[in-house]
Image 1 (cartoon, one colour):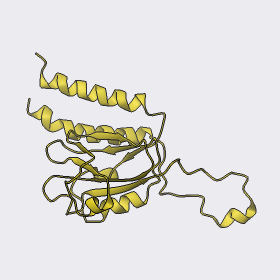
Image 2 (spheres, one colour; image 1 turned 120 degrees about the vertical axis):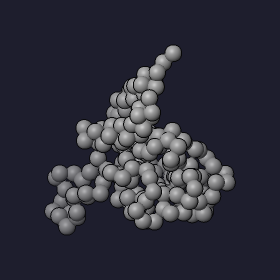
Image 3 (cartoon, rainbow, N blue to C red; image 1 turned 180 degrees about the horizontal axis):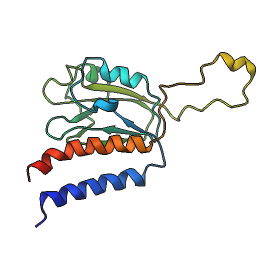
Length: 181
């Protein structure tokens, strides 16, 4: 019979394999950046985070959270999202961390369905564009000099630092389970 440590190692291996298998296409967006998916410090935290991202078809959303404490609920309309309504749920994920690949353009609505987390701001609306924004040509006209070529809010492909952040979040999710052994 396998121990919890073996199950935890198997889970970690599966997550790592999924990261490397599909990492060539799209960008990984860690929802909430360094805070991950948890009770928001204010009601606009996740909306402010989403406003600074360019999210496209093929990108992946990474929700870093502890199972049993948080979850993710997806609803199809802004009205259900605004009301934090559990009616007509499109998807639900309960085992963190969760990676969601975005395969269709358009709005996506996610919130935490635990307690009053959604009402307190643990919710994010994302608009998925058809394709990633293109970078300006290096030999653009002089007329374009006034344009802001350095969009610090644009998402960048996953880097080693992103992977380390993800692994730290994964460790935080698995640590309580490992301590129970």
